[in-house]
Every structure is written in C-alpha cells, then in structure tokens.
Image (cartoon, rainbow, N blue to C red; front, side):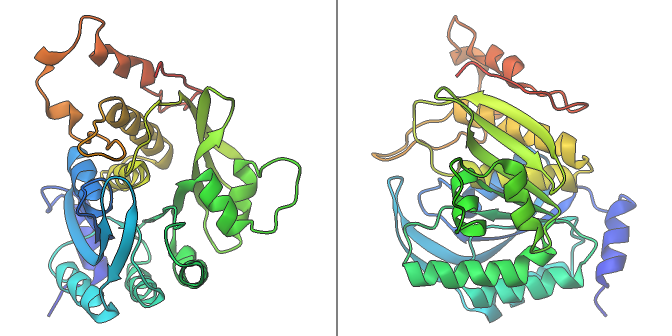
Length: 311
C-alpha cells in the first residue's frame, strides 16, 4: 500500500531522503530558456531532487513563443501520482501548465498535500489567444491560487491579471497587488520588475498588510527569457531545503541576479540566464573581477535590506 502524504512528508523531515524532493509542473521548453529546463537547472543548483511533471510543450525559439501543446489532465495526474507514491515531496512549483483542466488536476493533487508549500509562477501570456488567456487565468484564480503559498510574477503581468480595472494615476504598488492576490487566498506575493526609476527595477515580497522585503537591481541591457521560471524555481527549492521565506527570497533573488550577470545569447533571439554559472572554471574571468560582482548582489537574509548591484 502506498505511503500517505503525511507519512512521506514525515520521512523527508526525519532525514530519510538524501536530498529534499520538489515536484514541478511545467511545460517543456525546447529553447532551454524557461519551462522545465529552467526548473531543473535552477533547482539542482540549490541541491534538491526534482520530480518533473511535463504538462505540455512550447513551440518556441529564443525570440518568441509560437504555440503550445498541452497534455491532457490524465497524463499530468498519472505522472504526478506515481512519483508521489514513491517519494516524499517538500514543495510544489507550478509554472505554465497549458489548460484549465491541468490546473484542476494539479489543484486536486496539492489539496491532498495541504501542508506542503506551493509556489505558483505566472508568466507573461501575451503570445496566446485572448480567450484562452482569460479562461486560463480565471481557472488559475479559482482553482490554484487558494492552494498557493507564494505567487511569483512580473509587476505588469500580475497587475493586468489581478487588477484589470485599476484606474489610478499611478500603477498599483506591490502591497496592492498582494491584496488582490489575497482575495483568492494567497498569503504572500513576490512582485518582480517594479519600476523604481529609469535605471532600477525592484522586487518586493509582500503580504496584504505590508511589504516584507525589497531588493533593488540595476537594469540589464539585454532582454532575457526564462528569468521568472528561474527565480520561482530557486525560491521553491530553497524553501524545500528548509530556508524560511525571507531567507529563501533573498538567496533566490541573488541567485537570479548572478544568473543574469553570467547570461548568454545561444541563438538569434533573447539572452538566457546561465543557471550553472557557479560550475564554470574561474580562469576566464576578466581583470576587472567579474566574479566579485556577486559580493555586491548578496542580500542579508536577516533583514533583507534595499540592495543595489552594479549591472
């Protein structure tokens, strides 16, 4: 008889598992920019074992997403249930899963593991059909957000979704975005890409009551694909590894900053984060001390101060 969710979680906490196990629901990205490619490399960098559930596949290159092919919900459920009966899970990450039916299947699974945190990442869906976007977002708000521990997304993406009728002279601030997410049951929201000034972007960890943490970064000149998947995957892995939310956010944002700093352009389109920057030989560093930039971007997890890097 398979272990229950509770017994598997207890086994993981007791140290029977050699690495924390994390389950990811996401689409395959053949360009390697985001999707499961980002999840696997980012989470492995944080020393967790990744249980990857393929929910579909993008048809894309590094320039744009041309299409998406979704798996049916039974295929998603069967993949997840089979792995979960064998291994303890300490966190879930949900990326783009392609259909309301898949969202429903995933919500049913996470409900069975109510004590396990769920990190939900909402990417930009502007490449998709308008009706498909509306149906998907409505299903996500109704089915998955009530199960979500931390919602991660770009400021503009979350505002268009959660505050579509906003009429203020200014853009919603991170706490207002978090309040809109809390209406659907989300306790914490990590809002990225908030325009602080022409030169800077900020990320804010917020609850409906307050902004818990802020980090500021200078803008990169390059346009990246896969940054959001990378950040949310790292955050999920660090939480599974035992870090508290504030420390996990600090480390995940620092990790993303270093991935982007080491990013590269593999094709003719956008740049891609180098999620394995730490594994490369240091001999190729320039005399200016590229590696030293990591010390500028390291955040103090104790108080998560406003931080500036030099990109």
